[in-house]
Image (cartoon, rainbow, N blue to C red; front, top):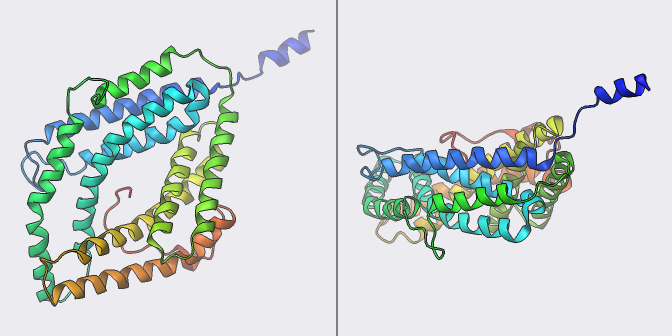
Length: 322
């Protein structure tokens, strides 16, 4: 009996999914509110580089919302599918607003990275400057949404949406589902999402397919990071490899977005516009060629090693998550 009691005494308690997810939700909500406060503080300096301009505020808010919405996918089985899905859908509205602004910022970075002759470069820089009012309008619209104090049910403020989510997490009866079981299900689903997107991709030359794969890699990365505490070895490997793929696919997406914008840029005349588009397409093609083996490996098993030659990163344009 004493021996059995001793064995029981040393048995480590199982961490429940609630014990893991609830603090993670609270931490992300706090980070989002902090970033939102920085967005509000930068409202008076909406021009890039202006007084009060916080270059990372909207980006940090966007990443926080993205991580939180990823966390809410496995949380549905713990706190109720209908309520958690509704909360995630509400947060999507704010994520989309930040995404539009971030896309414009990344466009500037992508175009600045091109190696162009002097005259096309000067013409392109002038065209980028002419987009200043458009960027300020996008930023002002996003800031107005993100800092709104409206608490109506039709269009609740960001803080109200976060508070409603926190209420869902607190008010629900705590289940006894093990965190490791939820982690296994969530990671397996994320892996399968990557494998499916990679399998369906006709080639790295397909922008829509690469964008879909980027979203799945991003989901796998965040899911693995969320559950690193309960599945440490596997989660760390998956998160690291997914982050690398996310970065490369993000660079590819940036070129695709820039090409789409430049194809419609009638105010950028010849010969600058054709030269810029050609430079973008060449840069994209080089990156896409280096991704072929990675995409093929993802179709077999996400996170598996591939030929090191396909692991060469493109020239960096900043460390921001894409």
